[in-house]
Amino acid sequence: GSLALNSINAWFKVRNSLGVDANIPYCFVTITTGKKLTTGAVWKRIVKQGKVFGMLFDNKNFDKLHPHAMRHSFATHMLDATNDLRAVQELLGHKDISTTAIYTQVSTARLMKEYDKAHPRASKVGK
Image (cartoon, rainbow, N blue to C red; front, top):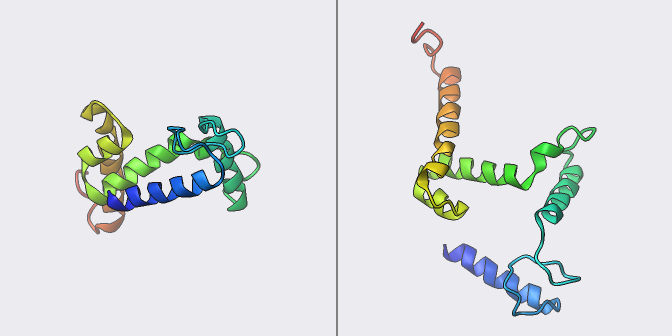
C-alpha cells in the first residue's frame, strides 16, 4: 500500500545518503560493499536481536529465529487478521494460490484451539 511505498522511498533516501550507489536495484544492501543482503546476513541480524531481547536460551531457539519462520509467522498473522488469501499470496510472491492456502490450515487449527478453550461445551461436543 501507500504507507509501505512511502517507507521504502524514505529508506532509499537514507540508503543513498550513506553512499550506496542509487543504481543498485536491491532494497536492502550492505553499507560497506553495496551488495544485496544475503539470507545468512539477515539471519545473523535476527539472531543478534533475538539475543538482545532474550529470545535465545542456551542456543536452543536458533531454528525459531530463521527468516523463513518469520515469513511464515507474518503470513499466518496477516491471514488471521484479514482473511484475505489473495493479498497474502501477492505479498509472499506465490504464483499458485494453493501454495498460500496452507496458511488457512494453520489459521483454522488455531481457531479451533481457541474455540475449545473458550466455549463451555466445546470439550463435550462430538464425544
